[in-house]
Image (cartoon, rainbow, N blue to C red; front, side, top):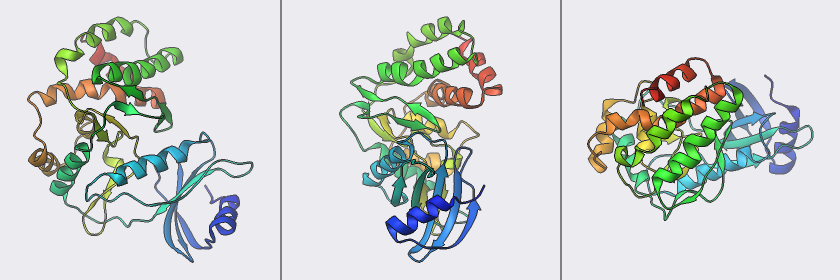
Length: 287
C-alpha cells in the first residue's frame, strides 16, 4: 500500500507537517501503518480506508484514558486524529516510539497491576468503542457478571450465530454456563483495562519501559487483561511475578482464564472464523 497523497496534504495544510521520509511498518491486520520523518519530528501514522467515522477518535480516547492513570508505562501521545472525508481515509498520527530489543517484564507486570488499581464507580464505559475492527458495546453496569454476559459474550455470540460461524445449538450450553458465572468469577471492583492485551499490543522502548498500544479500554474485572495475555502462549513468568508483587491473584485464576477468554475468542471467531470457531465450540460444549 502507498501513503495517500490526501493525508500528506491534510498533514501539511492543517498541521504544518511536511513529510521528508516515510516507510511502511507493521500496523496489524486492520490498518496500514507508516513511520514518517517530518519537519516537526518522527511520527507513527496509520490509516484505514474502510474505518467507521469515529474509529480513530475512539482509539485516541482510549490512549488518553490509559495515559491519565498513574503508572510509569508509556502511552503514545496522540498528535492528530482525522475522520474520513471524501477522498481522505481516516487516520491517526501518534508519537513515534522506537522499539528496544528487550525490556523489564517484571516492571511491566507491576505497572499493569497499578493500572488496574485505577477504579471507577461502574463496569463498562460511558460510550461504545472498538476491539479490533468490531464494535465493543459498553454502557454502565453495577455488577460485573451482568456486564460480562450482556455486553461482552452475548453480542459476539449473536454476531457469530447470524453469520453462521457458530451453531445456534450452542445457546443452551452458554445458558448453562451463564448461570454458573457467579460461582466461577470472584467479585471485584471496576478496574481500568487495556482491553486487548495480547503480545502484539505492547512493546518495550529502548530504555526497556513497557509501551501500551491499540487499546479497547473499559472498566472491568482485572483478570480479563491477565487472561488475554495467555491467549497466544502467555507473557514471561517475570511479567506475572511482577503483577502479583503488587496485586496477588485469587486462587483458581488459571481455571478462570478460558472463561474470561471467551470474549477475545469470540472476537476472533467473528473476524476470522476457522479454527477459532472450533476452539470456542469445544470449550462451550463442555457445559
